[in-house]
Image 1: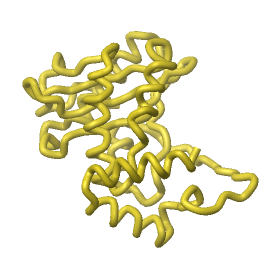
Image 2 (image 1 turned 90 degrees about the vertical axis):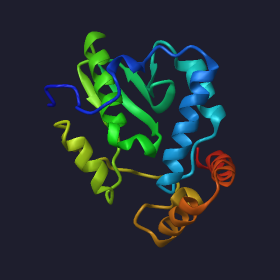
Image 3 (image 1 turned 120 degrees about the vertical axis):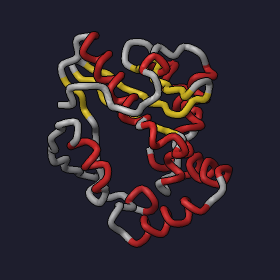
Image 4 (image 1 turned 120 degrees about the horizontal axis):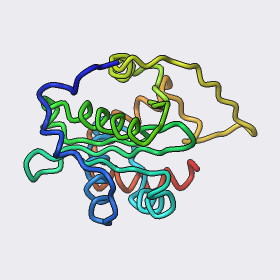
Length: 195
């Protein structure tokens, strides 16, 4: 476990939780879209996050925003259940990467989780081919658990796309080069059919 806050980060007081205003969800969403498109993955629609907040806040949802001065540079959504808190969504401005925004957000999330009595922090799923995500999570002393998926009936089309396939790699390559409006529109269309 990391025993001290990450070095070279924005001031910890600049990370906030307890989001209750719609504009905070919009700030998070803008950062989230940047991150998803940078990785070539379509973002979920804004309405998904607005509804998630409406239904799950404050009992099972926390949103953290990190600022560099007055500028929002990162955001993280935690979902909680029982004794576990999980980082479900994260977004950041790549221009502030050197300030270790993700580390700050995770640190504050874990710190608040301990204060609230949560016993487990779940980093959730890591794609098999994502060595950088795996390395990041291992630095927090996380351990891996295999997740087995069973689909019945067999799914087809876009929903069946797996990270190792050529179809998925082509989609990520196209999305990385697409303008924001196109990525957001594709996310709206795709997630309507993905569940």
